[in-house]
Image (tube, rainbow, N blue to C red):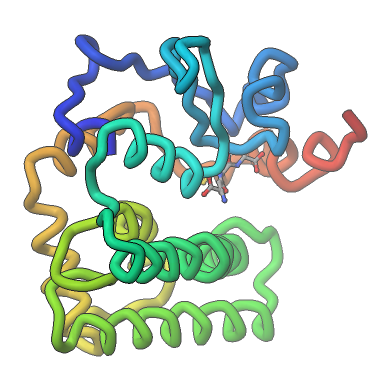
Length: 217
Ligand SMILES: N[C@@H](CCC(=O)N[C@@H](CS)C(=O)NCC(=O)O)C(=O)O
């Protein structure tokens, strides 16, 4: 979103790596910004009132940046609420369900068939909903590229981990390829790409899914 808005890494914004496999998300300074110990989070030294502001939850971050830059969220109420529908569809459906698909298909130490089927089927169902939506329009919330597309795209980059066969979703695949080809998206996905690795080692698993995650803070 930052790169799409014409802001450039190093010039207009800085990135701070939060290594969630090492437990950086539980450090008190990070929890002050993101009390739910999740990435991403944003700090803007120049908030709406000129004072610094911090925001967590990617949907809220996208809304904040859309409001600040005037980009990727239509002005008319009708078009705006269409975008918000699909942004909420990502926040309540795509993110959590595909996250569970990743968990049970890749991270869970035991293979639980019921859970794998449940979340793989749900992933396929959600891909189907989006494919249908894109049958007759260019983008997920209409014919304009918006924060709804920006929110959904990153989760679909891990389609292989979700048991997806792109052949079943031709409209969604065309949308995916179109977004992946955008120069700002290519700059965005390259950010910290070298630092990312599957968090399947015992220490990461323990931090993310063991007692560290559930400690009272
Ligand atoms: N609804 C949140 C989801 C964020 C999320 O799940 N982040 C994961 C990485 S993909 C995380 O920070 N996990 C750290 C943890 O579980 O401790 C958003 O969209 O911002």
